[in-house]
Each structure stands twice: as structure tokens, then as C-alpha cells.
Length: 303
Length: 172
Image (cartoon, rainbow over all chains, first blue to last red; front, side, top):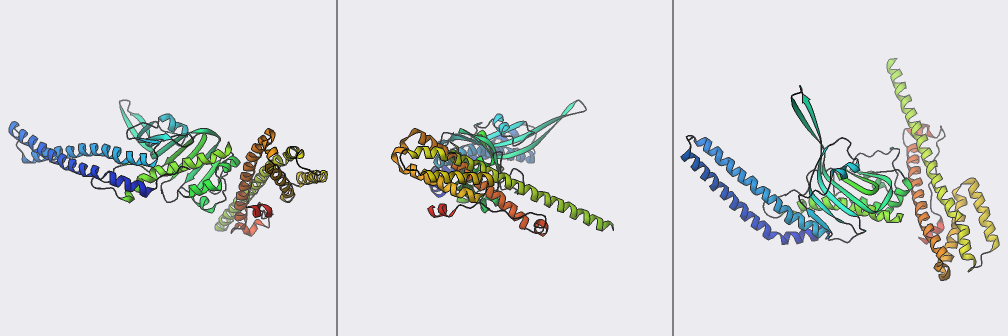
């Protein structure tokens, strides 16, 4: 297992390094807000002088729209800069072999299709991509994905009714193993345990049994991977996420899916982020990373 | 009358479901046990190879070989864990002797054998854990209320967990 900086170390470093960033951002936000007000006033005055419409109410509404647009544009710019500065730094400090790509499409439709987590879907949106390599050379890719099933039905043969059903929104991670595992294993966490599932493996750890369902085609091989040490590491994830998650190991791939909605969203628009809020970012990356590394380390037993 | 019939029907369905569950869990235990047997058989099949590695360097008594053959036969007939334990001890003793001798350790056939033994040990350990897990679930089910009311009467007896022998515990 790779030695990494602890949460406190990363948070302290980022808090001190980005202090100037937040000060500058607050200054820019105030400046943008003032500019929006002036632009709004200017447009209102121009319209008042040039058009026939002299209603104060209409002018006020136009003024509000312009100011609102200014705020939205500023927040979009802020959001992108925030992600580069805060999330980008955090990912690099967490593991220098990982790269953060806020708009990068690191997960493709084919990747999600291979996981077979969902059967009926046809659209995939992704953002907040992270990719890199694990210690043994396995390739790690993670992203926030939204999986949508879009159904178009024709009404009376003239117009189309489009229905969009969101099947999944959260973290999706795929690891391409340097050494494939000839088995199909599934690990389900933070979900209802089905103790009498025929394919379920009973593991010699009461804590693990309470938190996870371990299902495998080749049970003996699965237990060679999930040794007591690996089980201990997986039990350590408890408390880091309350969201249900599923892990599938199939051949050369590990697929991890965590139903945690939006990830890496800006928490605050002014001032420093709180440790509690920053913990969300940390756990979003740490949970799939811990699971991936535990399985990769466990699978070394097979070779 | 109808209520009584419904109650009897529900109880019957419940009883059948629990009975089938106990049968399924018991068969799972038998299946897990046979996995251990497969890997133990593989392990004991390696004893002649180990003896061949060790023979040129260490005096291996003939009567010891005969004793191993008898134990092997007893285990193959009964498949009881108590007969596998002396064989396991003999296997561990041979391996220990080989590993302490630098000349034997340097042999390429011993190195290959060691790799194979390592892989097999890992499989055996996993098979034992699998068996213990299945037995624990089965024993818990037949001892829990209300299954315990009829389990023993219908022949569902507690199964023994696999436990490491005293020598292994001492060494650890």
C-alpha cells in the first residue's frame, strides 16, 4: 500500500497555499458585481433614452436580469478556477501520479457498458475526471458520471415526446489491471445484505459481514484475494461514505460505482473551505482508491 | 375454520422454506469440505516429490515412508480431518528440513516445487476459510429460533469448524 499524506496534512497545505486565491477571488467577485450593476444601469439608461418604453418596472426588471447574468457568468468562471486551484491541488497532493481534468472525458460509454451496472441506458455525461497509474502499473480512471436513459416516443405521428430518466449519478471508476483476475467478483457495500444469496461468500469477519456482500463465481480464488489483511483495509472504509457502492471485478478490470451524486462541487464562494467540507473531497477519491489498491494488492497473491 | 386453514398453510410454507434452506446450507458445507479435500490431496501428492528432494541430503527412514503411506490410505478412505493432520505434520516437517538446507534450496526442481507449494497453500487456506464461513452460517441457522425447534429432530446436526492444529498455533 502506498504511503500517502494524511487528510490533515493535505488540508493544512491547501488551506495555506490557497489563501491568496480566495482573497483574490473575493476581490474579483466584488469587482464583477459592481461591473454588473454599472452595465445594468447603463443599459437601462440607454433604453430609457432611445426607446418609447419608459416604464420604471420594465427598467428595473432589465437591470435585475443583467446583474443576475453577471453573477451567473462570474460564478461559472469561479467554479472552473476553483476546481483547478483546489481540486487540482488536492488530487496532486493525494497522489502525484494522478491528474485532474475538470472537463476531461476520462470515462467513455464503452467503459460504463463493460461494467454492466445498468442494462437500459443510452447517454452518458461525465465531468471531473481523474486518471493516473497505481503502484503496480494498473491504470486508474475516475469521473463523475450521469447515466441517462432517453426515450423518444412519437405522439400522433407528428411530434416527439422525449423522456429522460437518470439511472445513476455519482462516482464511476475503472481500473485496468496490469495482471488480470480470472474470476467474476462483486462486492456490495452500504446496501441491504442478503445473507442467503446462493453465490454469497461467508467471510471470517463479523464486521465485514455486517457491511458487505461478497459474491464470486470462483469462491476459493476470491478468498485468496480477500485475505484478512485486505478485509481489514476494506472495513476501514466504513464511515468514509454513507452512499451505497458496488465493486465488480471481471477479467482485466475493476469497476467501482458510488451513488454520491455531484462530486468536487465548489462548497463556498468566499473564504476558506471548512475541514468537514474538504473531507467530502478527500473521501470521494480515497474510498475508490482504497478499494482499488486493496484488490490489486490482494490479487498479487494469485501470481 | 378458514382462518385455521390459512394459519396451517402459512406455517407449512414456512416450515418447507426453512427445511429447504437447511438442506441447501448443509450441502454448501459438504461442497466446501470437498474443496479442502481436493487441495489436501494435491498437497499430499507432493510428499513423494519432497522426499525425492530431501533424500540425497538427509537420512529419510524407510519406516517413516511406510507410515506416511498408511496415513495417506486412511485419509483417502475416510476424508476425516483427524487423519489429514499427521500427514500435514509430516509434510511440514519435510518442507522445513528442505528449507533449512542451502544445497536443497538451490536446486531448480525444489524452487519450482516451492512455488507450487506456495500457491497451493494459499488455495488451501482460502478453502478452509470458505468452509468455516459456510459451517458458521449453517450452524447459526439450525440453532436460531424457530428453526432450532425442528432442526435436530429432522437430522440437521451441528458441523465442526476446521481448526488449525496445536503445533501450527504454537508456531504462530
